[in-house]
Length: 329
Image 1 (cartoon, rainbow, N blue to C red):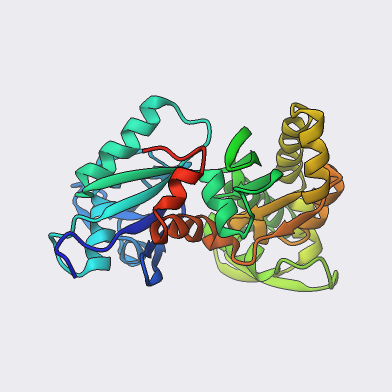
Image 2 (tube, rainbow, N blue to C red):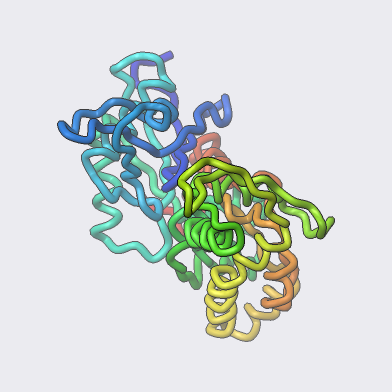
């Protein structure tokens, strides 16, 4: 392998970072976390190692952009070196550019990647990457909607012939859903659970609408005694708890559709929307979105990995970037 390293795609998510290496596929999937000493600020670990290290856990990436430039740079450098196995790799990197970001945001993303020792940066609109990874024929069709529900936000975009023609962002995303579940568990069971346990309960509930009578166990601390205990939570309550954040996403998606030209709306009615991101695994979500949008809605086959896979298509075929009208250097 050249000392410059293989070309790679990097999906910088608020919760997880995934790296796709040309010719190999996704080779890294780790939390976008940095652990620091609470008093000195010294970095104690990155990625998966950061979650298990005692100390202050930081999440330096928000909505696909560096919230803390220095920690994001260190995190990217750590991941790149881990993938390539030596400290001098300077790969060409394909990144997802969040829809609706400013020139300053774009410059910040490029600067952080260059400072992390990438030799060249190629930027692809996030919605196009997600659609490619979900198997949407973005170059050939008008009227597709992509809804990516990540940790910090839900991104909604309408695509037409390889370009993003309308987009919007709803703050909260999966984080808002987890908070709603935690509040419900405290109200119904007097049990305090953290966001991680609420997220785990959401995953354990599964993504299918039926059966309706299943239960999942949640572990937390009794609000009165402070002792640890477990409670059984009906999955139907998880559905009810997430109603408000889901309805916020639904209203935003409906608003974007209403602003589209009539011919594009007709295409959307035929082709519909695809759900990606961790929030797409929420039980009954396709059913809810289908009812609200009055169009077909499906979940991507690999919703958590869709953006990384889409960026990977661009790594495997760099000529594809030029064919996407939204592609940017």
